[in-house]
Length: 175
Image (cartoon, rainbow, N blue to C red; front, top):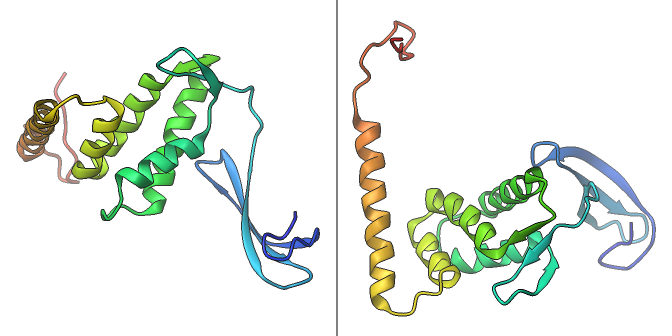
């Protein structure tokens, strides 16, 4: 592996571990020449999935485009890069597991928004405004109201008392 600092061709692996639920391997390396350390990732090479753009063009699926969009939506928000990487990995895994050779940008955006909504409301609205191409302020306000209503329903569900409880603290359901 070529060193990103001095371009030397040889490095030694210091640590290897599975990441993204075993979908890839993270390797910590040290350059033989300059002794600087860097990280590489090894992923299985899949049959390329083509993304169908809104105008009908097709291009290969690129996880980095999703990550860049998330980083932009989460700018100055309390969302870690680990959380963003996890979202990208989940979306990539779901798209791959579907087995389709093509996926639309609308489908990818919906998968991203579903996960981003759980992380940060502001980032979700930022991403949704770009993905759904809000034409005016009313569309933005409507999306924010929908989000607030969904959060209110989720909070109400969490606040409900279970019907029966077992001593271990688990809920017992009746059949």
